[in-house]
Length: 187
Image (cartoon, rainbow, N blue to C red):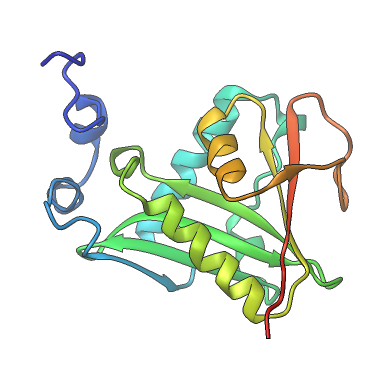
């Protein structure tokens, strides 16, 4: 294959490491049509697999003091809404919206399985969480991401997120990028 053995942007390594049902779901021509996003509990096998992949990825890029990932028990708190993206029943992505109690919320644990990237999963997760934030009357959604994650930064910029100073309990960190999107209520 001309792109180093990749088919549809998926490396052979990731394909082999996925359960068979997920492999089949990713190569379904109706991938987007079968994509569902729903609020679900984070404590389930497929989500834990994604969270472990996400943690390993972030830990490979940043020192511990620059990792700001929420653990599983924090994702189960009342102020957290957790969404799961599925294709054909297989879990392919997730994200959380953590309400701060001041009319704002923060995006946490946004992650899409590498084999499902480039297929609008992250876009659909973002659209879902922003719609929920608007529905709740929140004035802004914020996030922290690392500077070595250009795909994530590009996604957030595409959705209109702008750089801001550190917020909440975060301290300024040269390896972190803090972003916010002000939400406009209609009606």
